[in-house]
Length: 210
Image (cartoon, rainbow, N blue to C red):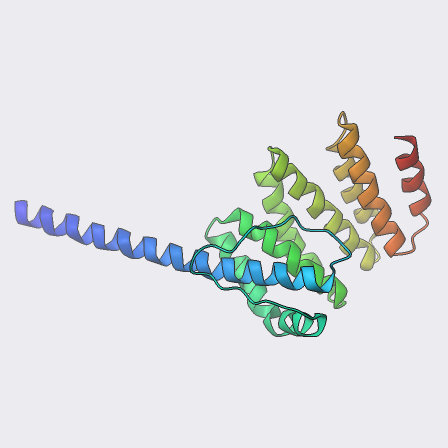
């Protein structure tokens, strides 16, 4: 019996080590795609400071580096399906931070490439994760950003009611914090102006009155 227990314990230890190695490998793959997508976004849309800095990539991860917009956009085009699979993998692995951060960066590319239906599907997953993981300043900031991404996607698809609902949710979350409320209205104003929507005037008025 003693030998059986010893062998069983050794087998469990091996399985735990293998699971840890698998989890570490998944983390490295997701970090590669996240940091590569972040670099591509920064190269393509440097005028839009939409994403906070991620810091250096973890040890053992060497992301792509893009000096020009052409290769960055081509990388997104080539890796689009793989990036979508990576977001799903992160969701299955319970890596919520990767779901939100990678999903938002991929969503930005899909928006610019006119893949709005695909973007909407992706952002539903991202939004559900962001809602679940909010509650601290960083999480709440991510949630607010995802709500604005969803609003932009809904506008692109002509669902104005849904878009306004997302923007209202963003602003509602910031009631009592005038600085955050101003940030919400600024985000809404940018979306309306980008889409040349009449509601830009309303958002501008709110911002001026705050």
